[in-house]
Image (cartoon, rainbow, N blue to C red; front, side, top):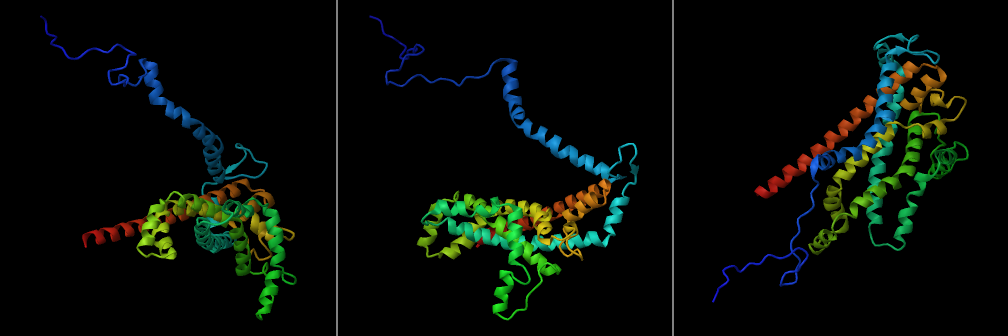
Length: 342
């Protein structure tokens, strides 16, 4: 009589075990040098088109513009005929009062439009995140101002801010305010143009905030409601802190767009030469000043210089926004650590 000493049987490939489960299979692995190259370098191949396009249409023009800014480059000049002047163009504009006037106008309109715009976008996104009837229609409706032509928006707002027949002056007249000539003063043109920008971009930013709000788990709000937190308290103590990365993104995008403001002030000013921003340059932005150098004076080198000064200004404001938001994040982190220690 023989006794089988082995209790384990080898299972033939493709056969099932006694319990009915198929035998474990190992993942296929690419063999050979070609397979290893595919795993190692294929991700770089997938992202390469973006960097190629950026290098052609972004990086190369940036470098070429920097080169032009170092020359006295007229419209008919070439690389051989242009005169090298070094940093003279930068020194000239840094001492130009018209350039600094455009900088002040740009920063003023940027602040007066961006701050209310982001606050209104947050409040609007929070309202659209509620259970409302026709939510899809309302969410689509807030994007209509953004897809409206800049020319059409400027024409309508120019009529609204008209001195003699404008709706704004008519409403102000009801409370005893004298008619304001909105296009004739710096502060009034800042207000008018900022309201134009806010009307176009508030809904767009609200949809970005709304998309971020919908990724927040609902359980958090239900727990806060059970603890007695009001909707307003939930918004400021829970929603806004969780939206911090999105707020940083929207702020930086709004900074880039606000400092490049061009279409709205150009069309709002009107007149014989709208690039000047009025008779006293009261609404001329840096981008309009750049176009003045190009289209009116045909100075390509100086226009390139203004473009680089605008580029540096955008970098400075973006860095300020980044440092400010990072300080808020570190302050919140320190506050949480203190609570844990207590």
